[in-house]
Length: 266
Image (cartoon, rainbow, N blue to C red; front, top):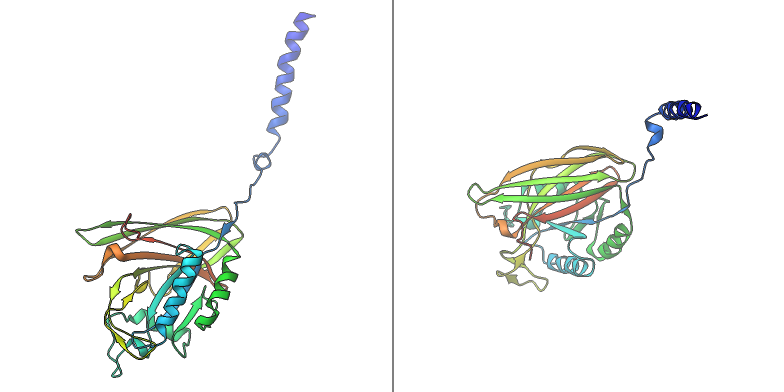
């Protein structure tokens, strides 16, 4: 009986291996859906130094960031329109032509005015409700932003990475630079002029063009994209942030931010 046993065992092994080999490679893997990712919110604040009510809108942003966290409510002050210029049409220091492109695209009729997650313009009295609604949603992708800065060349390098977590996204990736702590004049709600007013989250430039670059991702896919920007003289890198967001026809899918100079976060 022992010789038969020795013969039977190898045959059984061969049969088991043959049975396993008949299973397709795809059938051996079980897909695990990525964990949900909470959504951050982008506020595009259309403002101007000659806008007497704009400081009130800024205070509303500060309240929202204090309540939810500045890493979840990401604001960008876009100095644009007639209140970002003198009565003779001369631009003030915080004005950008890019900001005016956004101002005209959204057909801003009065200031202050905001755009929450690119869902259309709304008055600052409605921002709290809009932000709350957007924060209650999940994002279709994760988004991580990192930066490095070379002091000698004033070159800032950014990496935007992440993963598709729910369905697919076909839109654009936008990268902006903002600056905090800029002291310049501002007209106040009482009509006075405050020459020591501190402006925060001011849009300085669009790193990859006014409307960003094409972006597509499917669920489970990962991405890493690099950008560079030489900072202009007068910009204070330790006060600056990079803001990156993905948007499509339905609005902003996800947004995130980080300091231009690592470790400079206040």
